[in-house]
Length: 81
Image (cartoon, rainbow, N blue to C red; front, side, top):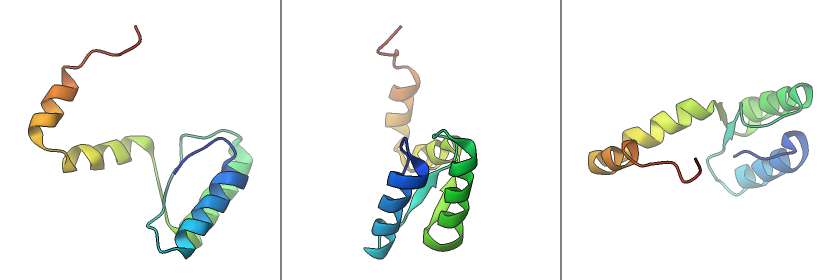
């Protein structure tokens, strides 16, 4: 999970998802307002889910992706130049 207002909307959604038995992973380095974000990251990690960095999530997804798909992604050109 990530979003703009980490300490309000994102945290509320994470808590709701946790109560509905979703596995919550909050992206630590994809939000702004550092002081408020840090309080939310601590809340989520302590009570409602996991906190991870963008690079860690990408690595996990890439490990789960079939090798053929990984190769095609590594040769793809960006949509915006």
